[in-house]
Image (cartoon, rainbow, N blue to C red; front, top):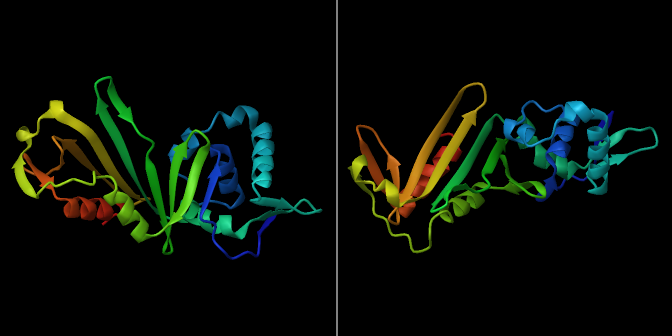
Length: 224
């Protein structure tokens, strides 16, 4: 058995291994868990006992799990609140960026967002594990704005798709949102010659201004 601690403050940021996150999902009886987190784990079926032991030990060292003399586990309240959007929010979204370099395509670590009851948890997978961070809508808007260079000066205009010089594409930005069990959507943006393009209908593409790019990506992340 487990119970939640009494510290009602929400933790702002933690780092968990994929196995620790999966263990917390089992402990908190998660309704959802993004497959990307599961795919990042090793084969836990072959070493389930070791995985559970290592996860419990790691979570205890981080102060996330406490065990009383009866063997009951207590979950830090702040961490529980941080994880709720990941495990119970039915809206998930992500931004993935690929750099088109001379050596080939290089994919940067993607950022995911989970929404639940007015709270948002953002995650990034890195070498140390999965960084989970509590954010708000203002933070997302500022982060999206940071995807563009400070001197970006594209002006909104429609152009034929054939006008985009594919040899000069420097970045591909994929924005995906999923309303679990209902719908999903993906929008692709390409950067070429210092301008951001979004493909539209009838063979047309739109050069996006800074404001339009920020608005489109933000709405995409919110599933709007």
